[in-house]
Length: 124
Image 1 (cartoon, rainbow, N blue to C red):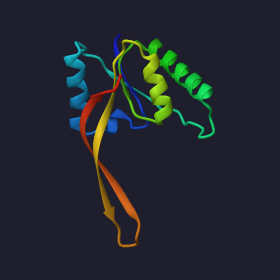
Image 2 (image 1 turned 60 degrees about the horizontal axis):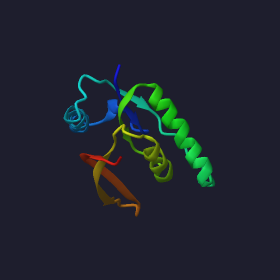
Image 3 (image 1 turned 60 degrees about the vertical axis):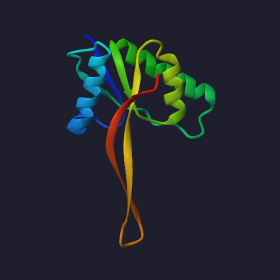
């Protein structure tokens, strides 16, 4: 069965209706219909990892995703692994969500960021 993979640490069940609808609409534009969204966590990336380790991590991720019959991948995660992953995805479309960031200054001096979904954007 064809599957839309959500490769991120943001479970699709917690998405807004607008985000889910936008991803499914994008999928439909690509000829992908009735495909379920399957969540797959984006791994933690060691900040000390070198390029070969990052590439190997991305390759392992791609191998796992490819085995799931992924026909579209929504990917949000650490930049270097994301770029390496996209290079391995071949013809499988990879998309991300875009957001607007609002920073609120709190009374105690801390800042709080709030993100509001805007659209789906193809990245590979």
